[in-house]
Length: 177
Image (cartoon, rainbow, N blue to C red):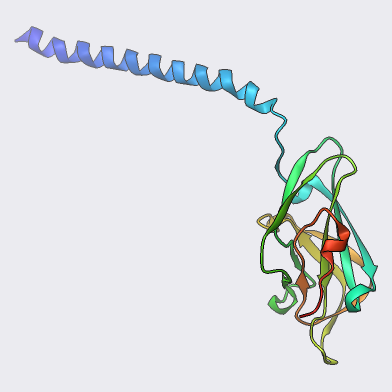
C-alpha cells in the first residue's frame, strides 16, 4: 500500500521538474529572440512624447493653423493617417472633429521628415465662438500625454476641425464644406 502512495508523489515531483524545464526553455527562447526584435529597423507608432510640434498660422481656405510634427533626435516612428486629438479648451465643444472622411497614408518620421495637420478653429459662418490662445494636442490614442501649444494669435473657436496627418503640407488644408 505504501508504494501505491509513493508513486503519485514521485509522479508529482517528476511533473514539477518537467514544468520547470519547459518554463526555463520557453524563457530561454523568449530571451534569445528579444534582442533580435529590438535591433529591428521597423518603425513603431509615434507617441506624443516622441515628437516636437510647431504651430503656424496660414491664410489659405479662410485661415487655419498648420501643425508640424517632427520626430525627436534618435526616434523613428510613424503617424497613422488619422486626425490628431486636439482641443482648444477643456469643454467638449472645443474638441476638433475630423475634416476628412477617410484614413490617409501612414507618415514615417525620422530626422528632418515632418508630418502636417491643418486645424480650422471656426467652421461656422456666424459671429459666435470662444477665444483661446492655446491648443492642446496629442497623437490619437495618447491623450493623457497631450502637449499645450501657444497659438500665433488668439483663435475664435466654434466647431473646430482637423485634417489627418499628411507628408505634404498642401494636403493638410482644412477646406470648409
